[in-house]
Length: 62
Image 1 (cartoon, rainbow, N blue to C red):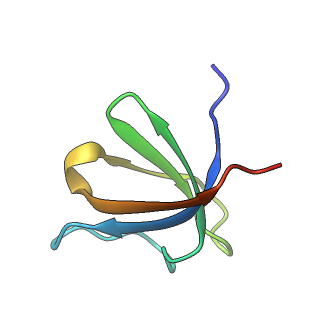
Image 2 (image 1 turned 135 degrees about the vertical axis):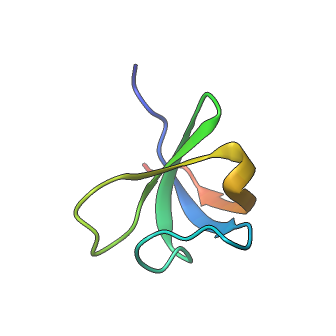
């Protein structure tokens, strides 16, 4: 399966956290999960949909 990566920001519900600044990330929604690539972090982080408060999509990568 090819993920459709988009640029934007992710805000998590209180009590959840990820490594790095989530204000400018690449993300891909896959089933009930959000895959998140944070600049400066060497791995893709994954959260389940209930952990996400908001996603702001700026654009699809070219």
